[in-house]
Length: 141
Image 1: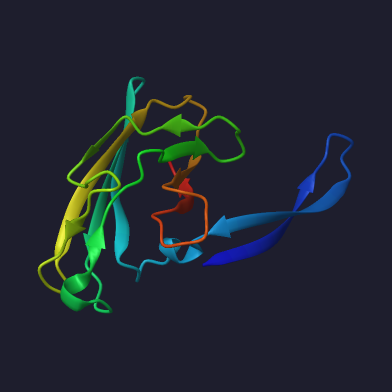
Image 2: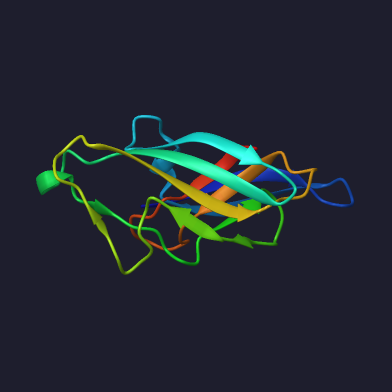
């Protein structure tokens, strides 16, 4: 799923202009979805994000999950990407965790480098592409 939104920003000359942003998988921000952020721990050395996933009612036995090795976090408005260091409790693609039943609850953790102290919001991106990826936008940090 993909959605485009428009927002107004001020340029350096204080004029306002509209820009278009493209978000993939925006339904992941919806609290009723199957994956939720449980907590974010941030230190100078690392950023730890804990997730809770509930297996889908749509798929036989609840489906499967995996994480792309090129996942990253990014302060909102910045261009630098902080790549995944370690995934705990979730297999890295091409491996998969297959659920035994629908509605099964599953926790996993992603570890990234520490972010600048000025960071207030982040994007958590598994993969910016059409498809079903774990992407979150404008998350309070």
